[in-house]
Amino acid sequence: MQLDEFKNWLVIYCDAQNTIHSYFAEMNKYFMSYTEFTQENINAYLQKLIETGKSKSTFNQFLKAVKKYAQFSNITLQLPKLRKTDRRIKPYLSEKIFQDIFKEIPYITSTFEKWQSILLILFYCGLRESEIEHLTREDIDFNKLIIHVKNTKGKVDRDVPITQEIVKFIERYYFTEQEQRGAFNTTAGSIQGIIKTIKQNMSMKVLYPHLFRDACCRNWLEKGIPIHQVKYLMGHRHISTTELYCNSSALEAEQGFRKYIKTKI
Image (tube, rainbow, N blue to C red; front, side, top):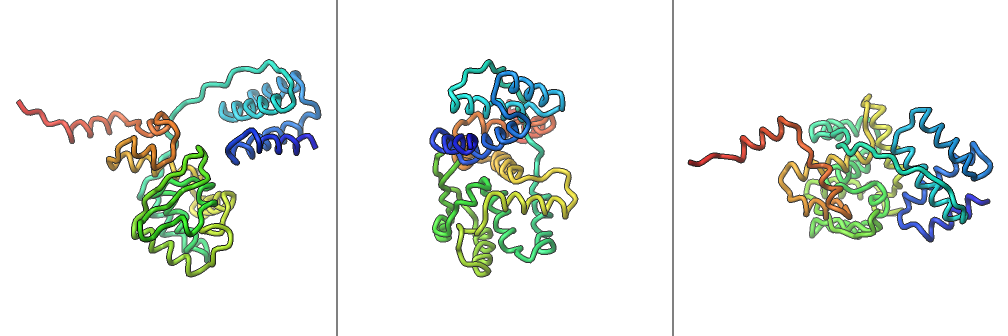
């Protein structure tokens, strides 16, 4: 009962649906181990996370949920600081690997038109799976070649360009299904399931929805789109988030120097 009240409270005091779901899930896991929300139990749970080798991100996510639950319950706790995590670029999904995945889709599912359309938007437009879930067919303007993205994580609506090639695949999908629940009749959870199925069928070690978005951002930057424009297209609230995708290896830096720097004396 208390957890249900906490979830209702989160709806009022938190903006993003993903955040609400995450905090609720974290506290639900906690209460599966402990019946009381006390300083002693919180400390024991945090210690267990450390001893079992959970990541710093997992530790921080639970800690954020605890702070919200303490605020909801009007309880004062002594909590540690968030742990510093390594700010590194995630595994990179190249365009070549994406094309291999894309070509394999008809052999994995009979609803390949839908899957291919969603993958194209993930990889070439950088939309989050939750943003695709909330798209309507009116949001996809085939004449202007624009996707109007609403209900975003950062509460900042944006327009993302698409190409004629992507339009062709989306139009082909539209012939297979009428719009019932958004443009693609899907949910964020269903998209996660699609990616998981692809990963299993293609025996890939790493593949998850956000990896497509990461690859899109890196791809735009590598092809020369200015970072402030990429920030807008990605829907990042802060340019420091976009800058995470600017990291280069020593070899890439040298190749860039040789390509662009021509000494004239």
